[in-house]
Length: 281
Image (tube, rainbow, N blue to C red; front, side, top):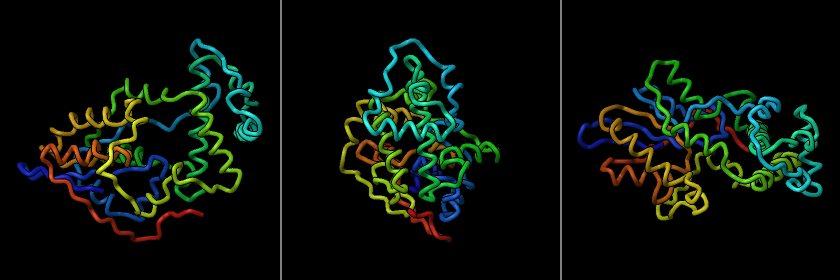
């Protein structure tokens, strides 16, 4: 968490980097964050959305025209059987039936699988309690419930782009990795879930540029730049609380460096645990 101070008005705000998969109950061990959130008048999140609905029928209703990709080509060899067993455990049909849809519907179904897998992992690794909100939705809902002003940084067109980001094959690779890890007892590569985040061991890389593959997709610097236009005014006139993905705070082109260039004083806030943190099993 970082304090943002406007040197002219003296207004103080806070910027908190989230890990989207971590459950809101984790905040019980770092009450500093809740305290700063409560003190704020205006809360910003990337975008407040209800949890992804992985219901097969609802996803298929959003089908659009396009080529049908053979599930056996997306999930090859043993991976097909492993992923197929997982979808059956969700009371879905076999993969052939599930993915027998055209164009965008296949993408939506794979996103649904990814979301469900992510939830399963968060619970398995004690990063979340079944059914609870993640950090981002928690802040948005709490802001609305307490009468604070709540704003989304992303526009609807950006959200639509994010929901359709990636290729079938790329999504399939991620799903294969997650399913195999879950089958082995939930041992995860830190590139999939950052357990260092849960244990407050964050390493920032302000000397590096954001990875090119993220930036080229318009998901990094371009979004940060748009967010800065929305944040600059409120940060000079209000006490704000901003909760966005940790990656947006990092790198040369991240929010922290951009805020400093805009004249704000940005300093880290040491967080203290009052209970044991959630940790890897």
